[in-house]
Length: 157
Image (cartoon, rainbow, N blue to C red; front, side, top):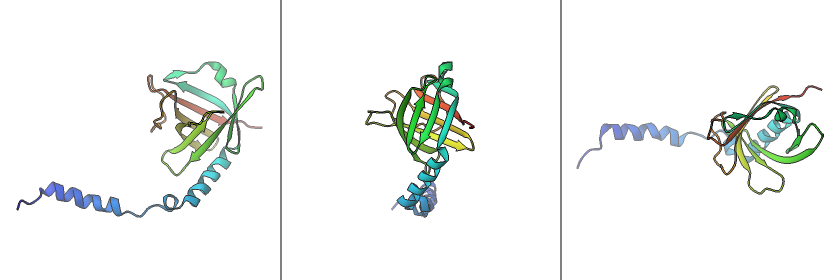
């Protein structure tokens, strides 16, 4: 009987620890994931201004900078300079790396998928756009990507 090549045996032996690794407590417990998501959502509460915005690799018009984002609970409310409000919803999944965010526009049943980063008073959000339903893996919006990239800063009262 033929013996398996040494590299095949080594590959199997190297794979065993990866398959038998203990899961992290947050991955093992749905309650821990919900608590982490609530904590992260609590940190997002308040008013935000758009500092920069790209769509499909192109900078959005200056009018986007006149929009304020208000986050109340899981409501993501767009407020334009005339005070018109458009409420949408978000769901955070901070246990993923990078943190994942799903966004629903009012009246839509399918979420727009994205990733986010929250560092201090800076909220960075990259999302798939159009018919693109593949969650981004990096914070970028290149030409042809159909991805949106926004950087928001917390508004000081």
